[in-house]
Image 1 (tube, rainbow, N blue to C red):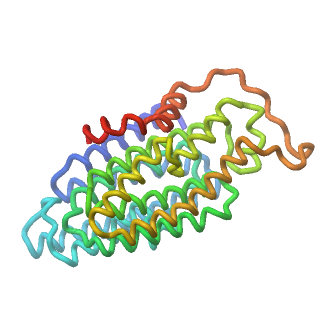
Image 2: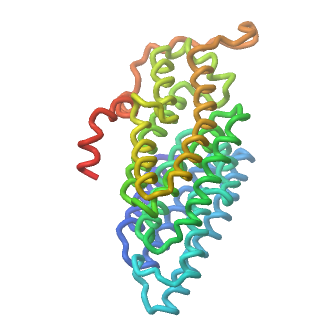
Image 3: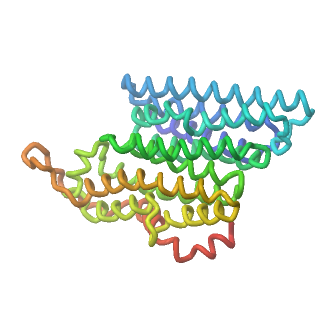
Amino acid sequence: MNPQAKLIFALSLTLGTTLTISSNHWIMAWTGLEINTLAILPLISKSHHPRAIEAATKYFLVQAAASALVLFSSMTNAWHTGQWDITQLSHPTSCLILTVALAMKLGLVPFHFWFPEVLQGSSLIVGLLLSTLMKFPPITLLYLTSPSLKPSVLMTMAILSTALGGWMGLNQTQTRKILAFSSISHLGWMAIIIAYSPKLALLNFYLYTLMTAAVFLSLNSTKALKLSTLMTTWTKAPSLNAILLLTLLSLAGLPPLTGFLPKWLIIQELTKQEVALAATIIALLSLLGLFFYLRLAYCATITLPPHTTNHMKQWYNNKPTNTMVAVLTTMSLMLLPISPIILAVV
């Protein structure tokens, strides 16, 4: 793909995201979502591989259906209340349809089936965009409409997402599919808290974006698409692999690292809101996710392949690590001590 086309698609993604997150009117928000969808499609299908074309087709069909539901929800609300303002969503049917539409956009259970397949058909960089930037507009709409949405529906979706994200990720051998199920599991944490503390859900999203970007870029620099490839990358970039272990543990939410912060705050807030049972269930379900992060970390740093003669050793890479990877990784590991400052800003 030539640089001019890439620039146009990058600018379109920026425009679409900015339009949705800054609009008050439903039609403008919907326009931003559509621009985003149309801009990412050529990036997904640029390799012309049948799997990439299939991924682009699936992505288009799901996003088009979700956008239609967003439009239908806003029109139903406008019909009954005369309001096109995003924050004035009050009709119960509209609220339910919008919850379904945003769940489809984000890939929450039971509308998650498209996400692992699309991520598997994309490159790691496009996968990073799909897991982070493309989820920002729907999360913003969820944030703006959170007072109107039913907490019980969101909580059910959240617990199912965390359970299924953890469960389905256990048996995967492809790194992109593992990260897709990781994303579904993290979205469960955001969905469970958004009705009680929307700002906390946004903080969780920002930190998740930070950690996921660090993992995707680390995997991209070693070109590790499968666990078997990941086992041999220690010869190529030993220091990066050692840091990848800590970044994965941060994504799992282990205490001394950044990833522990949102989980700790969410469990604390849920307990304050007297839904301690839901907090206990979601905390226990996150152990499933911890298992496959440990598996990834184990493959990346601790194991040698059982039959070393069958694996082509990669050449040691003497080039310095990308600055972006270094910055994101450092932030993914070391933000917990400054959590009071982060909370004061948020």
